[in-house]
Length: 577
Image (cartoon, rainbow, N blue to C red; front, side, top):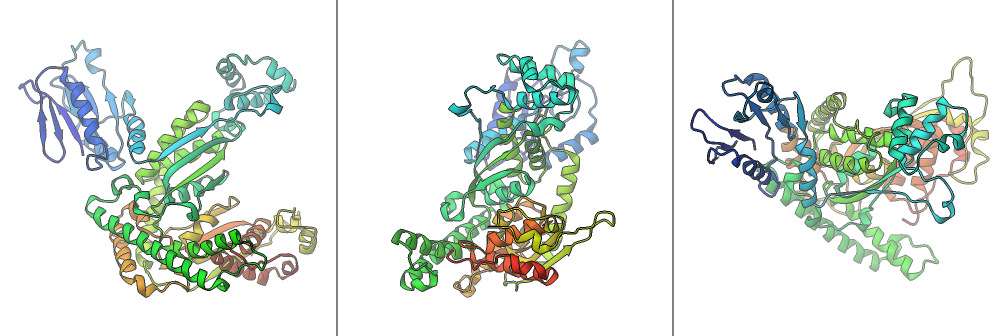
């Protein structure tokens, strides 16, 4: 929806024109303008058909020609990104104009811009339950005698080390703890550091995100590869249509919203029906759950319910709301927010705005460069295009048979050969957390699966080391043996058709039509010590049965190339779940 504030010709009246054709006409008094602006804002809220305010107000001298082509291109660009720009041109002030120029629906990147989108997005998001909260650390009583520093003061005094040999006591003696802001500015000016170079010295800034989609949680973990974090398990999330953002909030096209809502509701119905059936089955046949012989009643009940929950979860929509918390430095947060702000999904950009609002409370200087940037936007467009092309080519609802690919690179420089044996690298470990030697720490390992269900991807994507990549498509659909796909054939066919329609339109909202059973290729590149840790973890006691399937296959492919490791790596049986 585009709003046009205008005083046309000589009729002396101000109009608010909506792109859908209706026009609101007011009198010729200047006092009307603020009321029209307020009305435009109200109409822009999602409760009014999810329309977004995409207007700009520019002051122009009467009679001055508009640069229509350029302005039109800018408006189209802003509309595509659902942004708001407020630009005040000072032509009138510079030329003695009394201020009676037009208010016209144009956009410009010149002069002063007030970011209305930074103001409105949190309001819209609040209505839709997304909430972002920054958590500030306070010292425990045992640290009462230590210097108290803010994140940016910590970064600045540590940065001072590079220009001093006096030690921390001397540096802190020059800091006015009663006025840390002045000390920060003085130190940063003295050391002449770029903000990014010391942004990693702030310590961990904690941010909690409540009520975001599972897709957004997945994406944040993919982007924030240096963060420590946790996300709500599917075992503890409300599973019904009330726990999903609206179609408008997620950018689902209006004409497909009813179909999308229907798929979401039916998917939750399938989940709840299968959970009830599987829970009753496990109660009637306890051997299915593989209970330990000495399991107490409370443990037996929990494991039985997990049996049902972990098999029914493939019907959960990827759009389901979840919660996550992350801790990372100011530098990493700035990059994360910049990345989110450059994505085409409205939910990601709304989250970027809310996260930025919390970060500036703790680190205003070091997070200022956290807005969308053209290289991030260009890569996001290319990745979306690649996903759409591959997704349409492979789109299917039939299950894909397991395939695994593992590539081991043991090459070393001719002047720095590896002399340690694999046995010596691994045989001193008491468990998977123990230190490994250089023979495995230097070995590169890439591994990939053709059919990782999103249910498993959510967890495997959180392994922080190395690089993870998936086009995030639906090349197949996984259901465990305990669930018959025939009973859900109509749902899966309708879900597939909706995903195809969204992909054919080039809509980034296709990710919200996926269910956790959607199978996508997934690749992870890291080093052998990290791969061995992941394999032992994901096949060990309590692991989900599909984690164990995938990592066991990868581990056997690794053993085929590094056979001497087999005697020292513990492959578990994932019992009990």
